Length: 302
Image: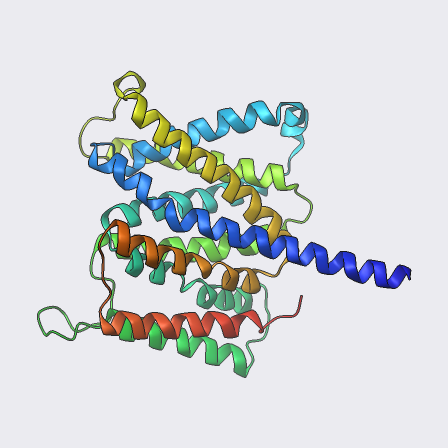
């Protein structure tokens, strides 16, 4: 009886973790749109990220106030999580504001490829035949998607603009973030979430001197701007907490597959909200990347 209860509890926990990741993917699949509204109002991605994550830290700091006492007892290793996750989230915003949403998303979701490479070289895990197939499928998908078939541009299958290069780097950062999160079992979900939020805020502050134009002061925003940033902040808090909870209980590669739900949300949202349409090679290449990610889900046991 106890064994049955334990099994049921494990299934319930896994279901809760999977549901958390799916809802997080929903949040990230639509969060680009309010950022674009701010960009159209003249608020850069860096400035929007800085103010949004400032709101996030204020709200979360108030809600988790009783946990501040343990802040200075956290290990130094949490700094790595803050730096990597900080760039990952900021780069994601930079990419989706200026780039085509689905191309940015698909480049971002090459992350299972980077996860396997990290596991092989950093964690010293052997790459089996399945892993080689995943890498090959991911690279083939990227090749098909990035090649120019019109003859008007360079035929090399490379990202075609700055936004897409940033998206690629964000996907790499996402893989590294998930690996660090998975290994950091000694850290609580709250502490890891705070590290991510603070990392984005610091990264945005560091990039501010390089932003073209004037960084808007807080009193220059309208009420609607503040409401949009508040909405983004609430989505960020929900998504980050749910990701940290889910990835802690599910392997990084399996989690990356559940995150593919974000592609579905983004595809629908970009079609109806941004009127973006993908070409045949982007559909085919993206499909291969998705298949590779699904194969990656079974590459490790929980």
